[in-house]
Image (tube, rainbow, N blue to C red; front, side, top):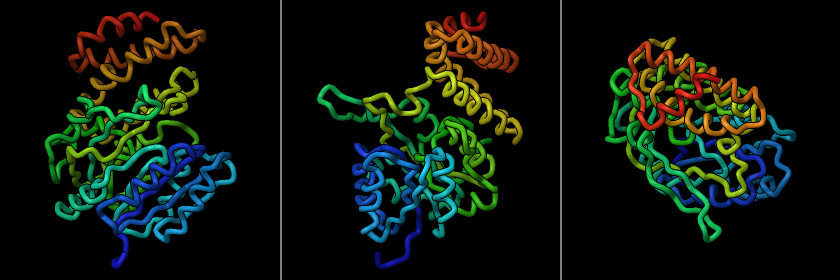
Length: 320
């Protein structure tokens, strides 16, 4: 690079050797070349450690290693602590960054002066050929990011609250420092609460319809989002959903909170209810039922219209 980097990409990973090379290659292929990356090896026991170490032959990569796993939140925080560039972004080491991702995110922030830029994403799903195929942008993702908007707030664009993942965004590091933002440690789904704090803390944010990242759904079912059948994972999931709503409520963003309640009931909750119907742990079913009752009551109180297709399923869960 002939000029100093403008953005640091924090790349956490644990036991992701089958995917890490593709993730790192997607960084090397960025059309915006003024980047640096912090690779955080969170106690890997496979070849991830070696792949990350080999990457540091390129001086744009810096390596941090946790000898024992500390979790994704702690790994991301470790990377944040080393950021010295004006902007920061995130990429999980099993995902794929689109070639123009950094160019579009950082270019948009440079032009607007906003604190945060948010893009679209798609899933990478296993295909019948033994590889992965990218899907299309889902409706709730499009609602958050399409059409392009610059210099908006949640009051002006409440649907943005539906984009809660860490790796579809770039932000000014000053936003993190000013707002005292950190990822929760010791729990899963740590980005949901942080995303809402970013929206409510930002003086203004931008959204762009460009696909920024391909989010991998692993063929072996080991992704966190594929393990909600575990009672512990489910409890962290519900805590993150509830905590994100609490952030919006505390900041007085009623429209964004209403949009989030609708999306949780229409998108997140039905899959949990289907899992709970046949789950061997009766506590799992009771916990999901209590969550549905609380959100359903809020939807009724605030006259939030729900998807008719999911209403009968959720209505049954209210009786658990």
